[in-house]
Image (cartoon, rainbow, N blue to C red; front, side, top):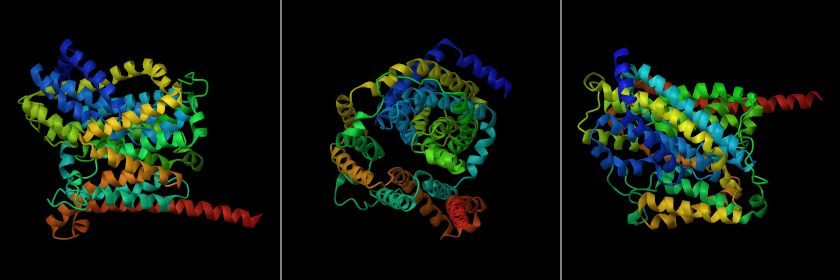
Length: 505
């Protein structure tokens, strides 16, 4: 390991690779800020550029920099415009955008930058230490375990429900699961619920749905509610860039917990930054005190820090199955795998032995990259936050433009614009009716993976016996049940206690 680190340090600190790190972070941050683009499309575009570089280490460092830079920068549009740049930053908008609405955009961006840096750095250290061991753990996860993991993710919907909205959250989750069944399934090449539309054969686009659930309703809300349009940053000055000591003490344990949890979730092929951010948010809300729980969704610093450090740590963790097993954990890492193969590098257990300079250079470059991202972003926060100082009359068309552009670029299909507008109107109505929109998105994201892994497990074990036959699956399902039962039990006890006090009086 020490020898590998020395080789990696020598490779990572070469002039060429340092330039690649900085270039990747700059491109990734910019792309992450633009709603709808995401790292997948830009990495695919940059593969020919990476191949022309020739050096596999430099090429992978560049592409990896774009990947975690996009995750880092994606929080900006989530916080300022409620338009998530990438899927992993959807949970960031739950508390980041309310903070921006209260005139704390600068503080929100600072917390996001610090949490992202800490999550990425802790992830890089864990990757360096545990990568060889974790590759064997990742191999223990099969379809049955992934099915159970998706159930765990769905069981956390109560965390996104808000007070007294659990039934509504369940309904929205079911709606998301139903929407995930539209299009061709991975195991069955037959179109389902497409209503005869060829454009729906591949299902609904996540980008379109995310924009329809968050960005478009916000723009319509600003139009329909002039009082809300008048709210915001007040005098237009960006203040409160620094976080106070009590806030730092609040987020410090959150960053520690969710960086570790996010990394280990990222290690699992198929889990990724999106699930890590949702679970990170859900866990922190469930373990918070009653007063702190009430702040979640209204501008909680814990609710902002948790998904930010979790998704960056998961992004780093996703390189474990990619480099040590040759298994892509997401669409983005699948493109990275294709780039490696195009460069005549075969990821797998032998990569650390045969190509140690690639393996260790990438890991060390991640730490350098996170430092570069922090140095780049912190000085820019006062200028980025001035987006909120733009009058609402000009900001609303800006939000609408990026929403429509992001949706169109995602699929290169005009039908997506019609779907976006239709879903956006429905989402606005649901929002007026006080239905939480986040559970729908969670159900949609996890639904397809849930169905595919369940069907595979049923085929392998000829029924549902895999639940009993595989202890890890059973353990994860028990955790899912506890995530549903414990919050309900706590709420019931709290109500009983209040009733008892009232009776005593």
